[in-house]
Image 1 (tube, rainbow, N blue to C red):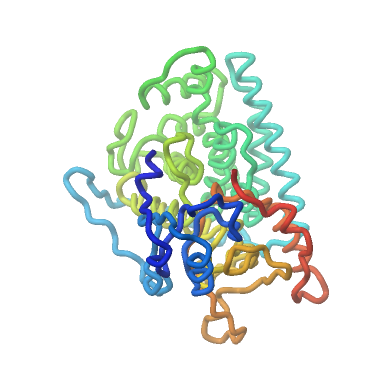
Image 2: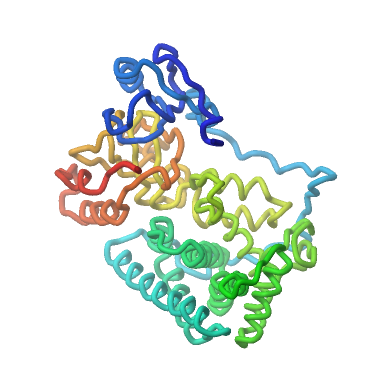
Length: 440
C-alpha cells in the first residue's frame, strides 16, 4: 500500500523527460522494457512509451530534474546542529595511515578468483558458527577466528574484489548475510585508514558476531524488545565464549552514537572505541542496502552513502564517516547505473582519482534491451587530458533489489574482455539473455 501512495497515474501524453515510470497500463513482460521502473532519459524511450501506453504510473519521489541530475556539484556543507539532534565535533584527530597498505590494486581475473575462493571459505566457516550457535550455547572461537583471518587477508590483498563479492552476494539467510557483509564493509574501511592487521581481525570478529546473543535468544523463544537487551545478550554470549576484550568492546558499543544519543550507555565521541565506531557505520550502511525489515525499501549505493554522510557528527564521527564512504566509493564495484543516455551499465572498475566517474560496462540500450555487443567505457574519460570522446553521465544508481542480474557472469565477461589481446567490442550473444531477466 505504501508503494502505491507514491504513484500518480498520468496520461501517456503527459510523460516528460526525467519522470520515473514505476508501472505501465499493462504487464511489464508485455512491453519491450526489461527495467521494471526507470527514469525517462531519452526522447526515444519517451516516444516508445507514448506509442505503447495510454497511461503510466509515475513515482514523483524518484523522478529527477534532467538538467540538475547531470550537473557537477560541490561537496555539501557540514550539517548544522539543532537542539533535538545535537552535532558533535571530534576532539581528537582520527588515526589515519593510508601508506600502511599498498594502494588499491587494479582488479584482475586472478585477484577475483582468489578473492572468491577466500570468500567461499569465510562463508563456510561462518555458517559453521551459526550452526553451532543453534546446537549449543556458545560461539566456537576457533571457527570465528578462522573466518576472520581469511576475510582480513582478502581485505588486505584484494579490496576491490572483496567489495564486489559483498555487493553481489546471493541472499540465503538475512542475518547470516548481514553479518558477513557488515564485516566486509568494516574491514575495507579499516584497511583504508591503515589499522593494524590485529585490529582488523578484532574488527572482523566483532562485526560478525555483534548480534549473536539476540539471534540465540530468538531461537530459545526469548523476546528481545530493546536495544539494551540485544546488546546485553550478545555481550553475555561473547564473554561466556571467552572472546577477546577488544571484540567485546565492539559488541558492547556498536549501537552507541557519536553525539551521545545511542544505546545502551549513551557514550559520546572518542569514548566509543574506534572499532565500534567503524562497526556502527558498516552496520547502518548494509542495512540501508539490504533492510532486514520488510517494510523498508532497499537503498542504492549512493543513497546509502548519502545517508551515512547525513549522519556525520550525529550517529557517526564526522571524519570517520567521510573515510568510510571514501573506502568504498559512492559507486562500489557491481553498482547498477542508469546513464543520461538511457542505457544501463554496471560499475566494473574504479580509478581512485575519479571515484565519481568509474569504468562501466554498458549492458542495455536506451530502451532497456540487452546489448548484443557490450561496451566498456570510462566515465572519467571526460576529464581534461582524455580524448576518448565519452559523453555519458550517471543519471542515478539503482538498487540491486530491482534486478535479477547474475553479476558473476558480468564480472567474468568483463575479465575475459579485459584480458583479451584485442580489448575491443565482443559479442555477448546469448549471455545476457541467459542471466538478464525480470523480477517477478
